[in-house]
Length: 129
Image (cartoon, rainbow, N blue to C red):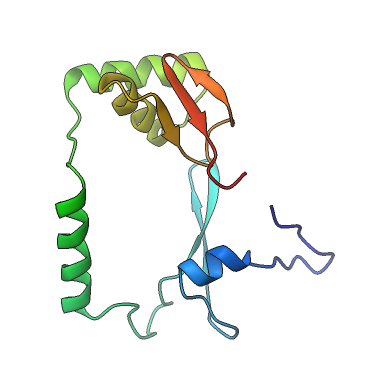
């Protein structure tokens, strides 16, 4: 976990900087996303793209070859509604949990849920702890 200094500065953890190729002097954007703030490593308006279009397509194809795309069904949405109400989850987090619950996943890896808490039959694990 990073601390905010008196000048409202934050140090990017080394592992994340390496993973996302963040270098000294890079510009990052802060983005409000519901009840969380995300640090976005995409370029600011007018800046160069992080990936060229061909690289982005290759990355997307690689992800699609590794993971199944899960589309919400009526049951998923109903489960998400219950999760949002029962666990006070944001709508986005409720959908993540609903998919995990419906597909019988034992663990949900996310830093946005309370670590080591059971949500229905799913254990939330923060991989950064």
